[in-house]
Image (tube, rainbow, N blue to C red):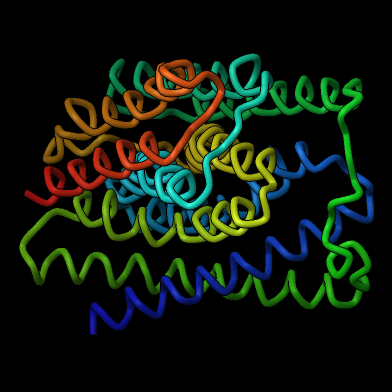
Length: 316
């Protein structure tokens, strides 16, 4: 029964996330928002919705391990699994906005999360609010920068999504919301039962199985973007999603209900959060050496191999 709940929950999250992304992007096209901003805000928020719903569900159930493990594991999966596979499929070019805005913000919120949790083992309401406010400020700066850019190009947008009717957008939003709600509920319940059945912690399940499942929307969006050679939205989606996972998912969850580190899972602060920071940090050396501003297939293999090592150690 636990495996069925996990699989059904993941399936609903994937379907719900897909409909939410379609509706959000369709609405963004109507508002003529640039593709970079869509990748960094709209798509990132929509593809982070599964993590948000799962984290909120776990927090309300009093299982903060799953809230933290879901986000930490998802951020690791976004770079090691998703970016690794995407780069293997099609080498990615990196623009200046990556190291000017996106990467520094990802590092700031990653270190902020570590220090907030390390301080008293709790992500408080105030700390969650600080993370969320930092996200709003970041988005404001990003949008202002995008509007000043001379490279904004709307010619490559999908005509089907650009011209979708308002009625369809509403229907997609309703389907997406229902899928995310029930998917998160079933996934959390199934994960708890599965952890008890196989004799490992809720956290180990959340940082691996749940994290991979909730990263499926990012994987799908990035692989499709890579196949279409839409480099900006692919890389922007990934980095933006990591920022959203910490500042929005954990931030909003902590505002609603403070997140406490379980003393029975010390690996959250002693090991896994450093894996998350390490995967984020290594992007700059990979981008600069040996071929500058490129994430090629070899680098993709390195990232994917490191992710497999992480999974092996997490389930050991």
